[in-house]
Image 1 (cartoon, rainbow, N blue to C red):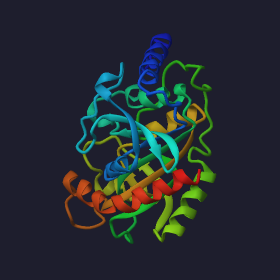
Image 2 (cartoon, rainbow, N blue to C red):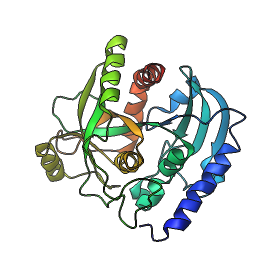
Image 3 (cartoon, rainbow, N blue to C red):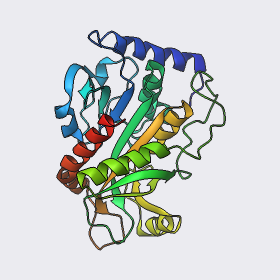
Image 4 (cartoon, one colour):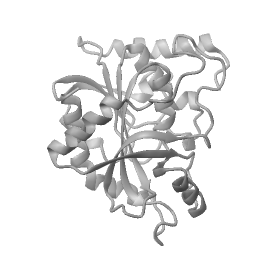
Length: 279
């Protein structure tokens, strides 16, 4: 929880200043894409102008999750200047919510207007055949530590931000249009956020399904809440890499998640590229 608002804001602005110094003369991108599991190859499609290690950015945490490289890419994708986050930060790594969302605050202060979040998730519906793609239209997060707990920093947003439309409705429609043009199957649905690192129990999955969730994962929602607090427009994609606990008799593993996400990376990269092009 943030206790020193002025200190935290200064820390964010220090990181902003460092990134501005490494933009290689280009404008500050208005789009940030977070490369979740399986979407790393999207960085290869980016005409890169700069690369910064998270460890070099003042205040940035270290990304320790498997498959998360810990690099900020600045470049051009589909004719648009973008930031690309090759790796994110998770509660289960031991980070507090203000650390998980630190990069979002930095992006918002830099002037980013669109945040594209991607992740790997477990499928809750029995009719999934992984890998499948879901465009997130809402989330469930009340079992997690509140991201905005503590003193409100007015420079970020209001004390009580509305959460009716965290995921931009125009972006949801555009993502569906892009998928249709590419012949990619995509669903819309509710993503449930859990803290991890243990996978959910079958009883927890049954509870989440009864609440309307169709997929579950350990990321994305804290970042989406922080971004919506700052007025950043959000699009979010989940790749269902496995069936959640109890849906089948199979045991869950992190290795399977990364392997199956890789199988869907070509489609996810094509879809995100098309979405960026048509923004």
